[in-house]
Image (cartoon, rainbow, N blue to C red):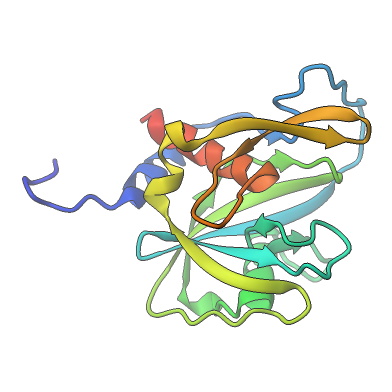
Length: 201
């Protein structure tokens, strides 16, 4: 029970959500006309959803990248042969992209997996960052490291469905902007999963 006047950590809602088993999501969720082929092969990938002092750490991808330039994303990437498991992938990528020392990271659990239009099966790893964190953006891949209050992403009313042309068809997707940052696509969908789970408790 919360004492009167006590400060509630928004991460508590997220932690409670991890107990709920949910089906994976995909970039096609809001596009019911898309029929995905059976037996398609997806590449394993992971992202770290790091929460530090009640704030979610995100990156702005380099505008020079060939894929998804300038987009907002979690630190993460494809699983390498040398990664012992998918959690190791998320921790390695976060260390490489934003200089997050894995020794200060407490892995809390996994959010629903997410399939992307680029053929990745992404496992979001929710984690708490302990101690002070000074980001170190990987040159050439990350333009900026910033953070957003977790409470912002847990507020369902802040999500909206938008659409744009992609490969000749209209594609609908979630967006959850914050200040100058336009957060959309797979990143917004993963955050929406988190908000849905936290709201169901």
